[in-house]
Image (cartoon, rainbow over all chains, first blue to last red; front, top):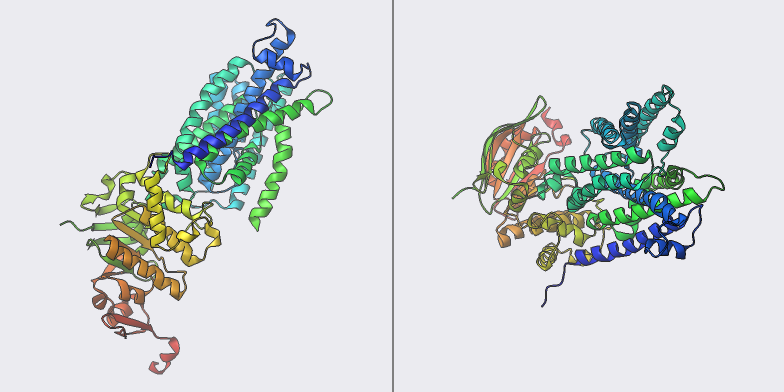
Length: 336
Length: 267
């Protein structure tokens, strides 16, 4: 008998392949749409390098649309992966960086950094990371001693942390006499429009290693679903795995927050949907969340750009419009 | 030859509360070793210390002749497997996937399962008679079936020692016997050393080679069922009235609880 590749590898290739197609389609749609027009065909020509490099469309696609779409993809991937990790670690399907207040903590850190006049990288990214670690510590202290985090205490602590964070943010905003106040507020609501390709490259350089680290721990996340004691007795070093995953995911969430503010509920919608379709195995779900979450935010941003007659919405508004009702639905279902 | 488990001067406290006081004991290879004692006597803590889930605060635990601290987590998991009292029955995996998780100590970080792993999982499920449930999720099963799934999972782990915390606690009579028979079969057929916490002194009498009677973190007595399960020792430890005679099956003691109404005449 010839040795077949293990079933899990075949499944991994299939699901990732399919989602990659979806992802590429979403990216293409994201690049094609925009107020300056350009049909799909001419966009395709630009991408394939068969158009005049001095044309208007060429500049718009390479300098405006592509960075924006890639930023949306990176942020969407990070936030849904972050949701997946927190859901596994806290054994609670409602956990998500935004709901837990980790995004809010990063935002405080980021605004502080902006007000101090730091550059976006590495200054603001660092203060955002410190902010996220502070909220993470706060959440862990509030919920310590519980083997499984109860749904109610999770929500309550999240609401409280969020309320605290927003008042700190409001305070910081109100003492600012910056003419760019509008920008800060727009950024807070989740703004993807400020990207340039160099910044996207820096962000990718920070995020991609995190994706690899998390994928490397995906089977440990499977074992963690059995509870800490049983996972430990199956050969997992709980402390090392938990700390690695928490720090890695907080780092990547804070990095995205420092670039484009608060975009909520992505980490709730995508892991939930993908779990329904693909089952609970994290070795499948981690790559699926990266590709699926990326596609999702690209599409949300596409809607944010094209739905309003004039101007555009922040992408965070669209994700919240979709995510918040789903959250309530999930809460009701899990309460039964 | 080294004992399978050797515990020397083990003490453990949670905050100010001393749970185990200066415990020393040995468990020999292939024994069915049952720990009994009143609530709060430290049974579960002792078990978690043996499983390496808790670190000993003072004293030593040797597993197969080596200090358990000197093992890597994976190596320890290949020697000792553990089934906690509360099973994670909300686990989203199917029965087959759950059992396969037991192969993790033998796999790389990603737990890629080869043909051999799948074959071992299949045999483990046949051993505990849950192979026909392979595609079901845990929530669909009865308590006895769930318990047997998690026993199959630890069989898959191919340990020398199996630790079980009250595996029969929530089961009906038929399932209690089934689980206990299963553990005896593991002991006999696979030469696995079984250590179990139980509240049921009669199950301990029927199945164990060695019984450890704990009270307030100290050893009251350790030895064969007929030595340990004596009227005097049990009455002192549990602080209640009971009768001990020989089981009609012969060869081991039988413990009968005495309801309060039979005591009235003594007053």
